Image (tube, rainbow, N blue to C red; front, side, top):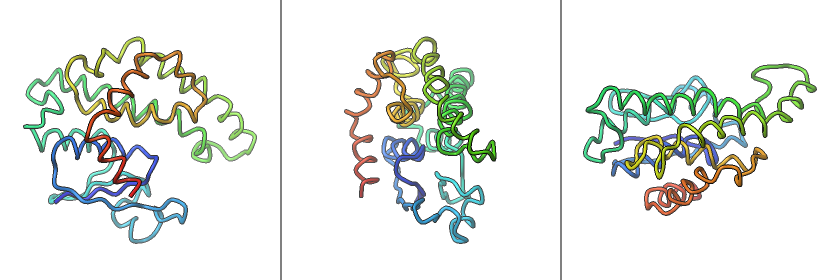
Length: 206
């Protein structure tokens, strides 16, 4: 059985949704950031990065959302969550998820995790002021060039969709105007109707 370590409001939701979509047999364990549980010796033994998500498998522990999403898709091929039989198409999926991980999420992190890049309080404030512009620019690119519609890759739902849904859920808090992103907004509505999304959200409210 798979075990997902998560915290509400984090990118772990993407893997949580994907486990539900795959029909996987899994359990979850919540990590409480309010009490700094991610830095507890017990959790650091699972993930020394002190972050979520972490996925415990029968072969070891996986971290990093793109890797976990690809693992789930490949482990449950009947769910058809990625074009794993087509090397180029799968690379396109990986390219989008890599962008969400390395660029979109990092831009968002400058709002509350400025200490990762600077030490001066004035620098933190400047980073926060940039969030609507920097995050907005990443989603403008997604809206224009990456979200094919109705799903990220076009007519077929893939592991890109729960990841985009998860990160687009942060847009309002980042001060980005959703009115400028009609395709992203439509994608969020489509995702919200999926049983797996509803299941994962309900479990995280738990």
